[in-house]
Image (cartoon, rainbow over all chains, first blue to last red; front, side):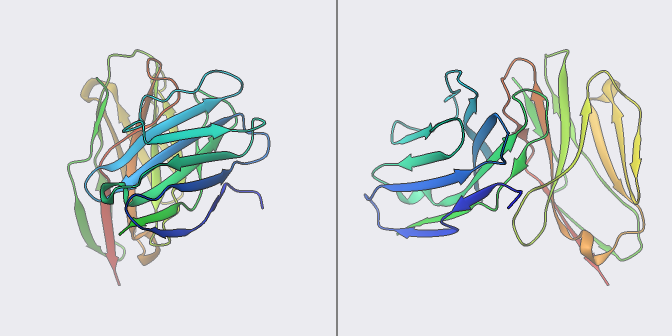
Length: 114
Length: 115
């Protein structure tokens, strides 16, 4: 497909478990972003990857959250020891380059922590 | 600090009415971009427009138009002759030169267009 894809589309987990969320950006896009959308907080930036540069992790809410991007393409967002407040839709986006290009968003992963 | 405010939480109109969604932003950057995204009930954010801080020309695309005014730090979005398919949540976003590539989003405006 031509768009950003994310998997799984839905994830239900128990409090305390670890989860991994995957993002496949648009082919050729060098920049990749993770955002979180929740009812109380709106759309929040989490982390940004640009090429081989060190990622901007300034939006990660705690050290339970981490992300990596392998080979400049696929990215995985990992949440360790999930808490109920982690329940949200996690959105991935990519852009052709880092700064000014529009970001194209994937369909998101809805995470529910019981 | 950078901030985007969409004061209208929900708007309801009847089909064919015109509607304007307000967006006010704050930034100290002289170079920045403003964006509008649409999030229909399906959930996926759809890019609508990008505007840079040096271009205050208004833009029209079909029934959509955007009014960018630096003097009032506003980037308002108007839908002319609204249709039911315009029902969605609309987000205004800001990206400034000082904050890498991340978007700062407003809280969104839910637009309901009734037949």
